[in-house]
Length: 342
Ligand code: ARG
Image (cartoon, rainbow, N blue to C red):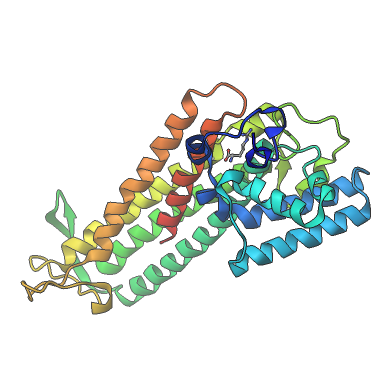
């Protein structure tokens, strides 16, 4: 039996390494490595707290933090060797730390589990994503506002049933989109509040007997509050579902907006002309200028609705507390955030 292929974190009592298929099937590193920055941020806060709690010496803390920063630099330089047999981002980073500084590296995981670690990482990551998306919504709103001012006197038909109804101005119409985005913004701000709570300290599910001080890590990581129940803290993903719900409503708005752009650029309407750099053409029908971008916004909306539905189904059957099912939360969440930001 070769023990070197046995997982170094939990393989101690196993008599054989995991099957190659199982290793591939259970690994998440291909997609969760994008959490590396937030994983390291969480670990630095945890190490800082462990020293204050008297669990680590100040030398150990300093060594852990300096090496975590070096590991981050390796990842960013593209020289880090991501290993599928180490399952996920958390064990890849911890294994590298232990390679570099030996047994001190293992002490970082004191009083912590991957269960509260990953729940913390996703919240930190999503908090940043929400902030970026809020900035993008504001940028779009500013664009609409500027155009609405310029088009304040431009008369256009207003529609009901897509039948010409009453005259409105183009500025008036644009400001309807502005209002929709204002509510999308509010929904994301609200979702951010519940995302910004810290599960770290829940450990695997039942907390830890080490004298950890959650208020310290909470403050270091900029969380608004600590989670009140450890079983809930490690297992629920309602914040991710809320994000996908808010993202779905925002995409629904962007999709309606896009539908109007598609209609308005058609030969039948001819209300607007989109710049060539935002359109594509056809080799056999040279009269065409295709509004591919708004069409794709409309099309990609389905991905985000799919992420929402996927996460709801993912959660609905899970008993407390953490189950491996939860590893499936990441790809839909990442995709919903990427799609909405684009
Ligand atoms: N990669 C795992 C996830 O994303 C981390 C937590 C694993 N915990 C465990 N007990 N196997 O959910």
